[in-house]
Image 1 (spheres, rainbow, N blue to C red):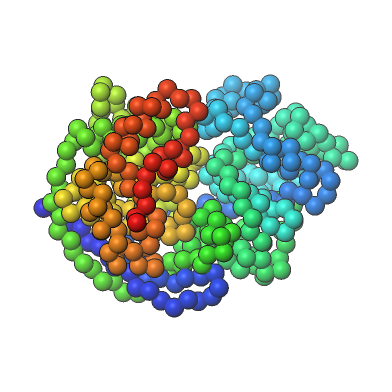
Image 2: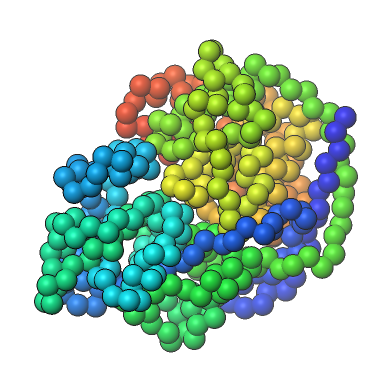
Length: 404
C-alpha cells in the first residue's frame, strides 16, 4: 500500500480580463530556491536593414552548414547536439558598453522575446552565443559605421507568437504604453515575480495569443488534504518496454529525453536507459520540480518541455494522474501535451478519473489537457517509424485520444 496526498484547489473570482486566480495544490518543495531564467527583449525591425535581418535569420532560419566555416569544431559540435541537424534562428547585437554587458549575462536556457511592429513575434531560448565578426558579416554585413552585429546568439525551441506588447507589459511591471528599444533585459526581480505568479513565459504568450485568461499562482493560504490509498501493481517488463519505446521515439523526434533518476539504471532488450537519456534535468522557477518524476519527458533545448508521458499501472489509476496534476498545478499556463499511457482496457477508467471534479475543475482542467495513448498505439508508432529520419512528433498526438 502507498499513500499519496492530493492537495485540492479552491476557485477564486476573476481578477481581470486576462487573469484567473486559483488556490493550487501545494507542495512545500514546488518553489525551491532556484532562480528564474533571465528574459531579454530584442527589437527586430523598425528600419529597412533591421527588417531585412529579421527576414534573413529569423523568418527564414539558417543551417549548420552555413556556420561551419566560421566557428571552431567544439562550437559546431555543441550546436549539432543542440539542434540535432535542424535549422535555427540567430540574432546579434552591435558592440557597445550596455549591449556587451547584457550579452555577457546571457546563458543557455534564458528566454529571448523578439519584438517587431508593436508585437512579440517570436519567443525562444538561448542555445549558445559566440562573438564572431566574420559570422556576423556573413549573416548581416555591416552598418553605416562599419560595425557588425558580432554579439551573436543562437535561439532554440522558438515559438511564433502574435501578442501585442501592451498585453505583456503589465505582467513585468511596465506601463502598457512601454515600447522596448534595441537590446534590453527585463529586471530580474520582475522576471522572478512573473515566474512565481504565472510560470512558463512561452505558455503565457500562447495563452494571451488565444485570448484566454491567464491562471495566477498565489502563495498558499490554506490546504485541503485528501489522502488516497493506492495499491501499485507494477509490471516491470511492460512498463519498461513503454519507457524504452518512448525514449526511442523521442530521439526520432529530435528531442532530448528524461526519465526519473531511479529508472535510469533500467535496460530493455540490452539497451541501457542511462546511455540514452539526459543525466541532469535543468530546473528553474518556470520549469517545475515535479517534472523530474514523470516517466518520460521529451525536451528540446536547455529547458523547454515538449511532451510528458505517464505510464499507468496502479490499480486506482491515481498515481500517474496525480503526478500530471502536480505538474499542471505548478505550470498552469503551459501548452505542451500530457499523456497517460496505459493498456486499452483501462481507457474508460482513465477517462472516468479525469472527469472527477478534483481534476476537471476550472483550475486544473486535466480532462482538457491530458490525452490517452494506448500501449498498442505506442508499439505501432515505434515499429512503423523507427527508421524514419523525418519522424514528426505530431503522429503521437494524432494517435492519442481526448476525454470524450
